[in-house]
Amino acid sequence: MQSLLPAEAYIDEEWFVREQNLVMRPLWQFVAPRSLLSEHNAFVRRSICGVDVVVQNFNGELQALDNVCLHRQNPLQQKPQGLRPLVCGYHGWSYLPNGAVDNIPLDSDAYRLPEQDRKSLRLRGYAVATIGGLVFVNIADQPMSIEEQFSLPALDMLRSASEQFDDEVLIATFEGHFNWKLAYENLRDSLHPRFVHSKTLYQQVKFQPQMDEESIDEAKIYRATGSAGRMEHLARLRTFSGGGLNEPLQRMPDYPWHANVERFGNDDWYLNWLVFPNLHIASGSGGYSFIVEHHQPVSAGRTDLTVYYVTARKKRRYATSAAVLLSHLEGAQKVLREDIDIMEKVQSSLRPLASRATLGDYEFANAAIERWYMDVMDGRHAL
Ligand code: FES
Ligand SMILES: [Fe+2]
Image (cartoon, rainbow, N blue to C red):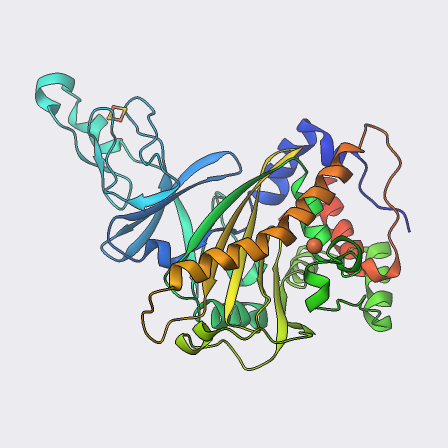
């Protein structure tokens, strides 16, 4: 079957802006593992649909606020993550958890702001939700509840896996020259690993196309008919996220440090969680370690990846834990580079009016997402 998405969906900047407004803004967006925000004054700064957002811990409470100072628009927090009060570095304005201005140094000497003006100053706030060890933000004016976006079983699985994450996190960033949708499509393509990862991941996990006839037929019917209304459209969205056991591991890796952590589950399987639209969590070690891969759309042709490497929760501190994370990163990075490389090649072949992709039955998950996505983009269903 032919793809419902024209090449413009991947390369056109106007399309990208419309997509950010219609598809991404209404959805909950992952921002960071909870462990980065566990202390008072810990913060992460992320760009969400082009909005500079800071999530800051104020005495244990997480608040998401605009990260732009109300005085001269200087970014309040300037690093991607860290530990620092919410104070502007330009002239020292500081802020309260509700976004109101706390202190303006030399206020009565230099600014003489009328009381009314000062009281009305407030950083815009956004909805925050913590699911186990994962923090999400929603920047919509009227955010949907997180249970509308993710099914209860999917939330339970995400919660139980991410609660098992250790607090020590290694973060790496990659710049990808491809459209972000290629990433979720690639992650739902179980046939590519035998070709793209033949010398790496596929040695360890024999991914198979999932030819479940019932699901294939169901996806085809949905693709032809769409949803009857908004409730059904949201119910469909919830089917795009989930995961758990994926394929058995050929050889269970066995490292001495495994004895130092509390393994998640007990299965010698590759574990895989797909969180629509742009988050992927996997464990190639049967629950001893995880990668949390976040694809952040920057423009039609660019996607930045922030990848978090963690082990399962430590039973005790051990001297080599940083080295364990580093070697975890090195191993996982090879596979990630293979994916980035193939997605960049696909992106480079796309031209306006280029012929559309051809989908096989095994791509039924992507076939359903395409319909859902085009229904939003064409205005048949708003979120
Ligand atoms: S710009 Fe922030 S205090 Fe002046
Ligand atoms: Fe891959």
